[in-house]
Length: 229
Ligand SMILES: Nc1ncnc2c1ncn2[C@@H]1O[C@H](COP(=O)(O)OP(=O)(O)OP(=O)(O)O)[C@@H](O)[C@H]1O
Image (tube, rainbow, N blue to C red; front, side, top):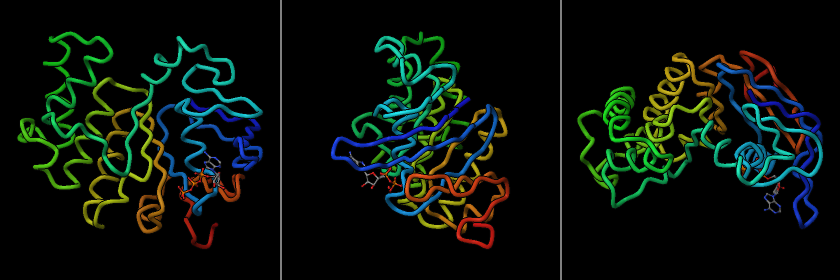
């Protein structure tokens, strides 16, 4: 569960990026976070992942209080999150299978765990036939599916996708969003930052809209730049 309670973020140069954000995302939800460039979306994501610290307020991330989390606890908190970026961020010199095994080894998984989990997630994202390919031998949509598999492989509580379809054409974008929807249906909480109005409006999910550091709308089945926002 994610809970922002009156969160303010001011960067070192004085930019007030968040001005009193209140938001709660319960386990099992699917949420789109939308808003214009510079409105504070990445700031929200970076606060959740612990990349930056908040200035004022309270933020709970899957049971961890981000205002007084100890350095030792940060890796444990991060394990509850799977993160996906616009530019995939795969290791080019490793195969699909190796990208996933590397992520699992990093948290101390055994060979037995790898053999059980990796085929399952590859099948979930529809890439079981491409385990031995290198990222450069895959299409953009396939690379993003590898990134999703990697985010899922350690069984996080929540997937955070920051503009996951920004580098993809509309059909591939729809496939990726449908895959995230399926992953959500299997029980993982999903938070998607996106500019893709057509996709957001097509899915009828909860839409949190942010503008100038404040949440201006939050409703299920909300529209992005439609009549409701
Ligand atoms: N490291 C930083 N130092 C100073 N100001 C920053 C920093 N990062 C972001 N900002 C500012 O904070 C505000 C919110 O930025 P943020 O990156 O959260 O927006 P965003 O909604 O993610 O935008 P985009 O859609 O363009 O990625 C902007 O005014 C931005 O210029």
